[in-house]
Image (cartoon, rainbow, N blue to C red; front, side, top):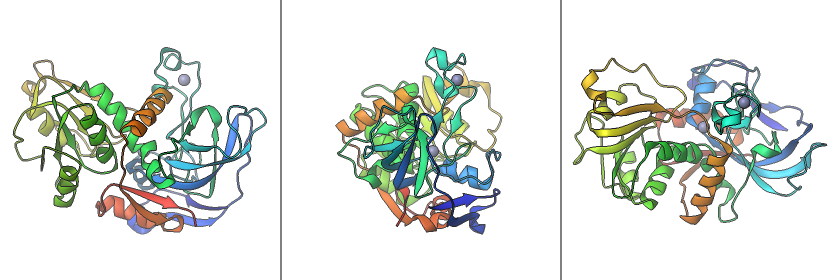
Length: 332
Ligand SMILES: [Zn+2]
Ligand SMILES: [Zn+2]
């Protein structure tokens, strides 16, 4: 099969992914072999490729938002049938026995395996995944539209959940890329008012097109204080910026896996029971709940399509934020 291999992390501009033939994997035990029809490109892929996340497997095939069709079942796989259309997310497998797995927090599993980081991912014509960790994709979504739901969508959904946002309240979204363009649709479906904070005028317009009541840069003062904020951009200086415009008792959620250092804070920014917390990974329940809600709304994704062989170009475009919505790779 064709695949994009990362041998060692390097800046995206140096095109570190090698597009080449590799053996098609064979599903073992409870795994299924999936023929990839589309795979979303996430900022976490950029962090893997550039080494902000320490290398854990070399070479590795990145990509953790794969939509495809089950072609072959491992000897113990029995839940899925050949031909089923499924999505493979970041959470590849958990141990099932650690204290976090046993208490409904498998997103924090001590021995979690991650797609496209510690296991080969979807920047390829095929990938394998444990059958219990893939999601059936609702029929209403095309392959391309479904791909960005699998990380940008699911992680954004978990961020919304833990933000505690309520109907009628104001939510701030910092950074307006793949995750925010899905999260805003869920937040508005729940009756929240959304303010979008992003430098890029094109992304500000995208936010307004999707129903943001206000869009501006993080240096501007929004018309109202926020009940909650989600920071998707990996920039630590956004933390004090968001706390400054957050109501008493409000929550700032950090949605990324990596962030530049957070500047020191005056305690008064956090006082009055403001909460600052991160979100790490997702549980399978988050994914199932989100995909149900996504089909109900229904979520409309905006995708920028790249051929699989141009994965480096897709990562470079993501780094420079040159498109609206989410980048998706498609094998030819
Ligand atoms: Zn575990
Ligand atoms: Zn991701």
